[in-house]
Length: 479
Image (cartoon, rainbow, N blue to C red; front, side):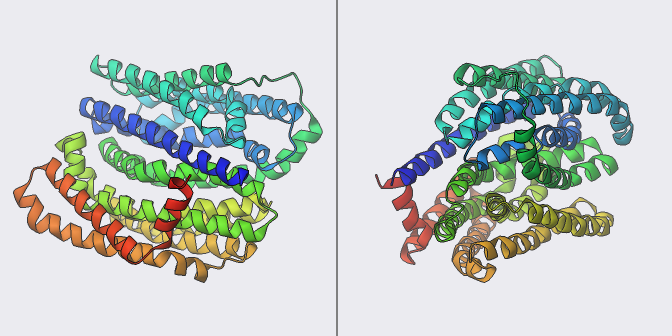
C-alpha cells in the first residue's frame, strides 16, 4: 500500500510539475512569438538537433542505469557525475569547432556565433545531472517542481526583456542559458548530494554496459526526431522552419503535461516491480489507458480549433503553421505509448533489443522520408503520422511479449478510447465549421467547442463505463 500511495503522489506532483512548466513556457512563448518573427524562431530550431545530440552524448544513458539499479552509492554517483561533466565539455568542444560547417550547411552565417554561445548549456547541464537523477529515482517531483518553476520564469523574463530591446534570436539564446544556470544553482542548493573525487572503474563498467546501448538508441532517436527540422531548415526558408517548430511545440503541450509527467514516474515505478510480470503488466495497462484517455481528446480538440487557437495565441502571422499543427496533433496521440513500451524493455535489462529496434525503425523511417521529400513539408508530416502507427506496432509487439501483454490485447484495451475521442472530434469539427465560425469570435469558438467536446466525451465515457475514467477516480481522487 505504501508503494501505491507514493506512486500516486508522485504522479500527481509530476503532473503539477509538467503543467506548471508547460503553462509558464507557453506564456513566455506567446510573448516572444508576438515580438519575434518566425524566421528568428527558425534559426534556433536549426540548432535543436545538435543540442539534443550533445545532451544525449553527454549523458550516455548512464543516468537511466542509475535509476534502474537498486543498489547504488556514492561511488556510482560520483563516477557518473565526472563522466557526464567530461562528456559535456567534449560535446561543447565538438560543437564549437563544427559551428562554421553547420552555418554553411543551413546557409545562415549568424548560426556560427549562436552555436558557440548556446552550446555552453552542455557544460551547465552536466553539473546537475546526478541531483536531478536522484530526485527522479526517489520520485521527489514536488521538489523538482519547486526548482524548475523559478528557473523557467527568470530565464523567460530575460528572454522577453531582450526581445523587446531588439536582440532578436539572441534573446532566445540567453534565455535558455540563464534557465540552465538557475536550474543548476537550485539543484545544488536543494540537494544534499555532493560529488567526491571518485572514479570507480567497476562501477563505470557496470553502468556503461547498460548505458552505452541506451546512448546509441538515444542518439538515433534524437537524430530521427529532429530529421524533419534538418530537412526543412536545409531546403526551405527559415520562416517555414519557424512555423513547423512552433506547431510542433504547441502540439507537445498535452503530451508534455500528461504523458511526460507520468512517464517520469513510470520508469522508476516499473523498475521497482520489474521482477513481478503480473504486477508490471497491470501497472502498464492502467498507465497506458489513463494517458491515452486524456491525451487523445486533448490533441484531437486542439486539431479541431487549430486556426482560431493559433490566431488568437500567436497572431495571424503564424496562421501558416495551422496545417502542420493539425497533423502533428493527430500523430502525437500514440506517441506516449512508444515510451511506455520501451520502458518495459529498459527495466527488463533488454538494452540490446532496445537498440536493435531503434536501428530497424530508423532505417525504415529514413528510407520513407527520402521517398516523400518531393511532396514537400506536408508529405513529410503525413509520413510522420503513418510512421507513428508503425512504430507503436513494432514497440508493443516486443515489449508486450516480455510481460504477456500482446499487441492484440493492448488494442482491445485502447480502441474504445480512440473511437469515442475520434468520432466526437469529427462532430465538433463540423459544428465549428458550419456554425461557430460564422457566429462567434475566436475566443468563444475555442470555448464553446471545448465545453461541447469535453462534456460529451466525459458523458459518453461515463455512460459506457470506460475503464480509464473509473481508474482515474480510484488512482487520483480516492484518498
